[in-house]
Image (cartoon, rainbow, N blue to C red; front, side, top):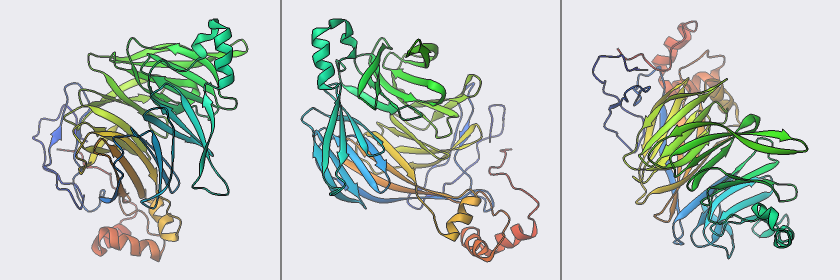
Length: 425
């Protein structure tokens, strides 16, 4: 990877996207780690991105997405939640409670956050999976009655403004909701009880993500990112502010943590994505500069980070240690990209096993937009380089990926590991 001390001019580079040919260039930020678009030497790294299809149902802007197995849940300003399977509408259910701002899935339960400040809980029927029934609300009717008789626990009521996002604790026992009312609330999933309400920021809380070891990150329109820690206090638990990671003039619009819990990403209205590496301390590691307008949503899967923007594009980033490479810029939406979801595609056959050994992965990405559509993308991340070739099936696969001559060289030089990226000279 290039660093800021490099004095050589940017090298021309090309991505392997079959449908997009980017003008290659180098992004560099003063005092920040840099990244570049990926070069294409045959022994380093190959990837392929393609559009699988679009889901269109003219019900207004798509505000929320959640993927679970072969099902995709979409929330829009129509107050409806649509369920899609194999790129076709599978079922749907409606709540008379305003825009569906957030959707998250835990086991058999689907949680939806709405503009009226409440959370609805849904379950699919076991006899008829196309039928979804509402099985609860947060706060519950019983707790609302209690609050009416005991004003001292008024903070346990519903949010006073729209819910902006939902997140689950690591053990999935707690649900966090963030709101434009400047607070986040903590709900116990087992009985839908509100355990705590925290006034977290001076403006709307736009983003929240729960991480491991009881840490919670919040981002706000006031330009700050704050770190909270859940700790026991007597028989209860409370969240305490431990650190302010960022304090800037522009609004924080999105947060996400990668699956390993190692990296925290923060999108802002200035089009930048800041990221921190989580170790003993949170260390600011760099800025990703891939968008011309505000970053509206973030997602992670495997070694990929995804950023969606008001510029209508989605940037696909890949981590290599602490560095990041922009693999592709996904174009196709005609409006701002408001939500993202991603999952890894299962590769269960023998060829898939060898593919995974070499670092190969297939990912399915979903992007929802104000153009009233959801686009489905496939990112194929080929193995970084032909590793040891233990059997004929892998050799056949490698011949396809890298070319027969390349594989002969790799087989003859198995003891020589190749780096994934060249050091820029």
